Image (cartoon, rainbow, N blue to C red):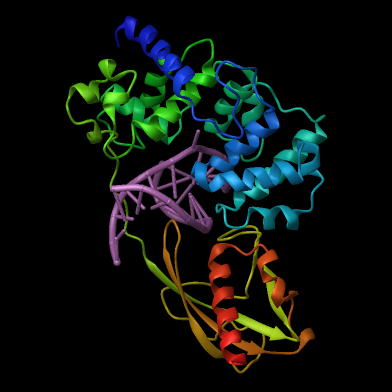
Length: 350
DNA sequence: AAGCCGTGGAA
DNA sequence: TTTCCAAGGCT
């Protein structure tokens, strides 16, 4: 890359940011002093593989209930997991708590450089760089999916992802400024989210279109090149709604595996073959009440939901008041199943 | 190191 | 309807 581009590109991008930065709850004004590292860290973890729109109310809820990292560290696991319900990738919530407790045990301040941050649970290369740059003003090369796309287009990097990551990071390094690296990173992500979009990028609005090899080639959508995806298999399972005296049986899923650490309806393993009633938590007279279709990252699931009754002491788990099922913090799959059960109960009463 | 791990919005 | 994909990390 020409040396003049290495100077011109960051300057143009920071000018654009000063005019056009998105206003977000966890973000300082362009050029302003860095925001609270706790809020930066919390927002970055919530935003991992997750859209700004989805994070909004969770960020407000968490910062209200747990205003400092020490407050979060002192919280009950069950409350934090329930507060995260619906946001997905639940290992993030478990690591969030582990990280808060590690920081609090070490004195209550986040490490102020990439290496220190990178050693904490749930903080990988991206998040360490982002927090170091945004919260502590460090120069760090911040590369997320937005930046990958913007940089791949700027430099017309033809090698396919994910193999091209080192080349993209090296290219990003050449345009990252020594000052305002945090604003630069956020600007790159804003440009990726609003201008240099996956489809139909609005190059006319881009502050660096003159420097963009993808734009000059006339077909910026050609980049980034990506490896082909694999097909998503279908699995089947059964969830059991067991009710006694207005209470439903809930279990907690093991920390490892799908929906780890979350409250759930009893449900056996999910596989290609229909398990039927093989994994029932109690002996019961089961009645089918419907099917839930749900799509995960690497498989789709058809979940049969069945309803039955039992004795209170016949099974291990938590008997949860049915009318308060909305507060149980069920992940979306089981929230759908619960909605089906509620509907079925209501129809029975009519 | 390639697979595992959620969810919902956009097109 | 289907497909794509998002401020990734862990093992």
